[in-house]
Image (cartoon, rainbow, N blue to C red; front, side):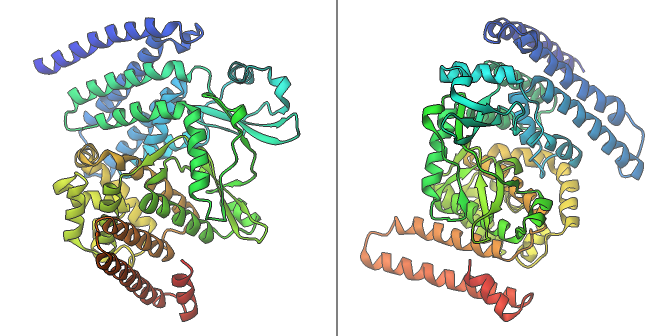
Amino acid sequence: MLASRKIFKYCFYGSVVFGTAIGIASYRHNQHKIENVGFVRFGRAALAAGDIVLHYKQNLYNTSLDPESIEYQKLKSKVHKEAAEKLLKLCCANKGVFIKVGQHIGALEYILPHEYIETMRVLHSNAPSSSLKDILQVVEEELKQNPKDLFIEFSPEPMGTASLAQVHKAKLKDGRTVAVKVQHPSVKGNSLVDMATMEVLVMIASKIFPEFKIKWLVEESRKNIPRELDFTEEVSNTMKAKEMFKHFSWLKVPDVYEDLSTERVITMEFVEGGQVNDVQYMIDNNIDPFEVSDKLGLLYSEMIFRRGYVHSDPHPGNILVNKLPDGKACIILLDHGLYAHLSDYVRNEYSGLWLSILDRDMNGMKKHSHALGVGSLYALFACMVAGRSWDSIQSGVAVTSHSVREKEDFQINAPKLLTQIFETLALVNKELLLILKTNDLLRGIEFTLKTQNRMSSFIVMSKCCIQCVYECKMKECNTFFSRCRNLVSEQWSLLKIMVYYFYLSLRTFTVRSAFKSVLYM
């Protein structure tokens, strides 16, 4: 008890001193708006965190109900929902970095209770917006011209609002219709304060709950958010992605107008389309959701396993769909602010892990998981990577349907393993943290479109994994004979994969459909 009191005492006084310091330091950088001053934002966050802890203590931890009873489960769900709403309220009040972290929380389906996921997911498409006056002021400051001298039209309402910026439709003087992405006015000035605030709160949480290793979340945010706040990096990423994936004729990466883009403003080509999770839009426009999922799966398999250059924020607001002139589906990829960079070593080991999962090779899973840093937690890590239960992995993820019931059971059981999950995330090679988040967002899209059980996804992934593994082996070949042997071995492995999936397809489809599903991938 005395030790606990000491912890709270030191954390409290440390927080007061820290909050005052960051408040003074940030005041002059936030246009003297009281809601943007550091100690106000810090105080709001500290009070919200304390309120959530107290809420659990008073309403759940002090109950006499049997933890296995239905009544307890209903109470726990209610408390989770109320706590999640308190957290959402904090994110919307502090905005900026807090919205970004809230979006990340909304993607952690394998960690958090579904009440948190459903509540925080609203931030992916309905983040708070800035006023038109503030937005136009940023445009003028960045582009050094009055917006009226640049645009003949500028939509007063944003097309979409995200954590760090919002997008307006506009028309240039030369008649081109563009999308203008503008950073929220105070987000950059608040970012250092907000990250420091989160670091203090995580430090306090780690003292109270030492079993929850969540320092990695702050470290990743501290590393990635400055990159996302510099729009010149997004411009560079956009141009690189456009060039790297130009062989996909069905992929559209909007052109960027560099002369009208700065650290806080991006002007880009305006492209029409519906969000990738808008099923009604696809029905109305006769777009096949299976074709959309296949193309999205192919794109991300190429990014992860072949290129090691991965768009790491594929929530539905950043992926649009429309139709090409030939009637086929077109994927429009937006918001290139954050890309994961995978080394050859990580790509090779991660490809090996996926091949082991698809092949039900337990020794392979253990070997590659160990190489990626998770050691004895390989079984849990395999479940997190695949988004499937251990029973499904043992039975074969390619031959067992990914049902809604399995997904719900996965989400129900995941919180029971929270300590081990946090330990896994603390141990795993940090290059993969964004990939795990990306996987979850893509799986969410597949479930919305009801395409999660298509065979083509496994064919594409297997081919890309094999190509990655043999590409890495080829770099170690130093003779003509060894290179030829490696090439023959790769083609033999690809042939075996095709034959295996053709056999699986025959169990579900006609011979013609089976040939089509294998040969066209």
